[in-house]
Image (cartoon, rainbow, N blue to C red; front, side, top):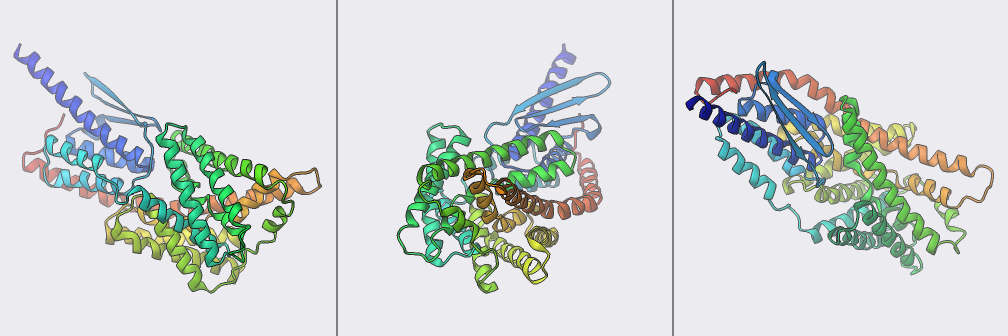
Length: 449
């Protein structure tokens, strides 16, 4: 009888450990961590919980996490559903720190669960209206990067604010996420087009280019590239499908607005085609615009306030590097965008040790200002306004392929240095982890399953 009671207690304890492990992974997945980071953190937490790595089997999916612990005699499995996907960079950073702190300070299971719950229920760093205002200024920064004047900057900020809050309200009402994106893109585009008749700005069509770019899913796209390179193919493909659906919803909203409001304006396609992509302002103007855009998107990603200035500098470096490689050296926007994101990611490999945050916390908001909005709109409008003229399809696909290549190169530029650096320092981290676990065993705090 005593042995049966002991076995039941051991099973209950193991189930609790697996539950904590899965809740940790769920929070990371729902905060938009890449799959490699989720796996590393879960293995580190498993080491803290006393579950040997050779007995642990983890399967990570977009909507489901699965963990199995087994030996020659027993096998225990547990599943965890992942439902609410968002972006929370601070949660990713805090969970990483918690996994190390739990080992170093001999946390009890109750203490670890308490700290995990604090992270799960912590309020975001910025209120919804502050995020909406900052997002407006971020898209205004895009407008300035595309060549708009400061009045167009303010018009874009207002249109984006309205669109951002519209999407939030739609989601609160229970409308499908992708339909909410389409509705918000439609509202943004209609409002920006209405402002083009006011005559307030000498660049009236630039707000149309920039007001919906807050919808572009930069984090899922970069995570998709990261996962594919790391051989997490299933999760990567799912992230890619989610990205395509978001972009599709955005394109549908814009296209519907164009068909509804712009059909009478037969010159608008020509006006977009004539927009110059060559910088006509000084580097300091683009530096200010890039810093505003980077900090605005950082609020969407819930990055700590102390890091906003770091992200701003990263945005300046990315945009100025891209412009220099593109226009001064003449290598074009694709190579320029890759070099801009590559330089920022390379610097972030070192900077993460100064600021004690994951690499993506610094790199992703910094490279977002390089999104090729002009080319995306040219491609979209070319498809919308086809009339059977020779060369229309070629023009549409040319702009579409170039914009896709730029976005892919931005993602690769962010992912590649991070992946190689991670593999380079993985052995040192593993040695440090083994050292901490040995010290914990010596203190008698380590109980292996």
